[in-house]
Length: 180
Image (cartoon, rainbow, N blue to C red):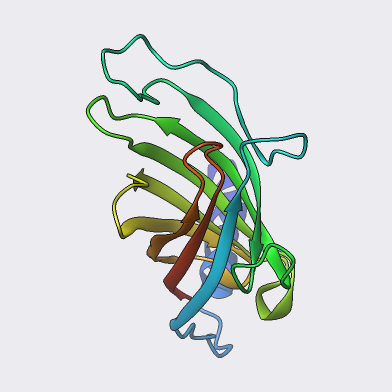
């Protein structure tokens, strides 16, 4: 009879756990949304107030200008318009690494952290290839947080302005993102 008494608490535990998982409370359905964001990225690699700093030197190369092997850490301003003094909307924080030997091509890993407006406190994560001398670059959105939880989409980048002497640039971003 004692073995049956030990089995009774186990059976009660199973019954209670199945009762809690088959609750009749209404389920919340998540609805996916498509959002379009447009902003400008200000990459300042020169001067005392640089927002992008190389932390490695380029690999030896026979190319006249090669960034292969350079890793740059960035905390770049995002604004509503190309003017750096226009309304800030966030920061692009992450790294870009020279990953192409035959052209200027970066591996971008960055978080677009929004600090104003509707998306304040939300983040989009970008991971992809960025050849900055191409007219348009497409990079995937691989995730997000806040209002961009479960995000996926793409970021189209177009160089708005580039100073070939300093390397400073302003890049226009059009982002289309699906999120809940």
